[in-house]
Length: 147
Image (tube, rainbow, N blue to C red):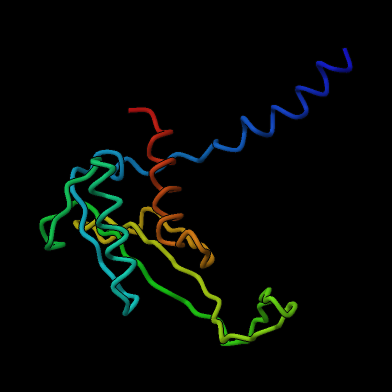
């Protein structure tokens, strides 16, 4: 009995982890997207383009006027700072400092026809790439919706 209770306590939060509120129907009915890069850097648009090609859920339009959805990416950067990195050497461990800037990437999904914001999410910069993390999350949410 205690084992069953312990398993339920452990398993229930794992199952509930991927439960999301419903997305607007316009996201599920859309056939095409355009990518709007407001970051000033090429990498987020490149990442989004490759991700969407691989996903094959939406056709990618070069002009937003001919797309159903606009995927906009933007950055918000924190204050620059210093981070100490410990480096092992044959003579021992030495510390080196490097300049870093923490920040966030935001994705906004809007309807091209109405201009309504249908979905928005923000993620901190990370080694995997915040843009990729945001797109994986969006794909997971779309995949959980009934067709």
